[in-house]
Amino acid sequence: MIEKKRALITGIFGQDGSYLTELLLSKGYEVFGLVRPEDRVNPDFQYAYEQVKLYEGDVCEYASIARAVRSVVPDEVYNLASPSSVVTSLEHPAMTSNATALGPVHILEVLRDAKSNAHFFQASSAEIFGDTNISPQSESALCRPRNPYGAAKLYAHNMVHVFRKQFDMYAVSGILYNHESPRRGPGFVTRKITNGVAKIKNGSEEKLILGDMGAQRDWGYAPEYVEAMWRMLQQDTPEDYVIATGISHSVEEFVDTAFSYVGLDWREHVKIDDRFKRHPDKVRILGDSRKAKEKLHWEPNVSFSNLVQIMVEADMRSVRSLQTTVLQPLS
Image 1 (cartoon, rainbow, N blue to C red):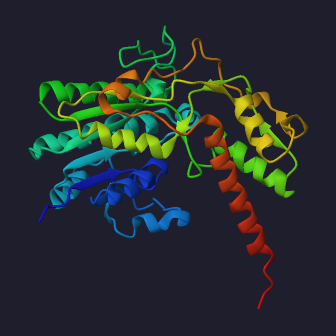
Image 2 (cartoon, rainbow, N blue to C red):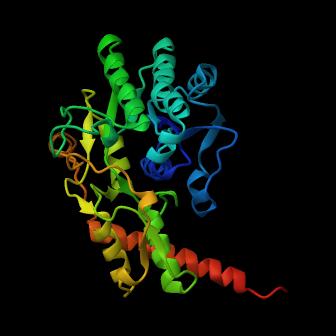
Image 3 (cartoon, rainbow, N blue to C red):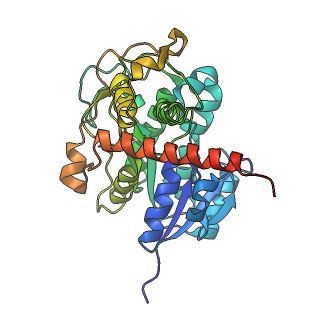
């Protein structure tokens, strides 16, 4: 009988954590999660965790990570736990640095001390490049982060390299560009747009307030990105990879695509508020994922327009479902 692989996931209740959980279960893994007491699962995809065993802990606490690792004895560890908002990092740089920069180091230290052979994945970010000098960005691009989130991610990214080289550990970083889905948090601009479109189309709202419509991002589909995470840990040699579509689109394109899908003109419903604008990028933040294509045989298949469509349709269903629930007569 073939023994099942065991995977431990931090940040398991987030967008990527939920899709990774589903992927690993479909591949026959035993899946375990490290969660904080205050973490809450979205009831819309509670089903994804019915076969998962959860351990209470925090990536900033060596002891709780060690307890989970001793109990699980994982073959693979995926660190997805991190505050993921750039805006929040600007408001709370110390909190962001503690979890985002030091959390991965605590996990790596636990694995080293336990003499574990587990393969470790760190969710890095395109924010490490910041004010880089080249576009598109490959794995060797100059890193000049310009916010606490990017700086913290870069520290963790560099420490993964240190543990790999100095301690001969299988540790890799996936430099993930923006990846979206219906499970993206409502505070992110993509969900703000698709949820706003759904409510406007449904008649429950009239306006959508946004900032810089000219800002461009390399947007991909989250389920495809977690597939890349898994593929990175199946390689004979641990290496870092840029995971991206290689195509950038502006916020205005996203807005236009979303509103057009439901038959509306965005110009009649969008209001620009300068308070939501960020400093413009010096170069286009655009990923060069040729290495992932060549070595991992990974490439994105969901197009930008299909991604927007998937998200709008999901938010339309959610808005209609909520309206039906509210209108139900009391028995």
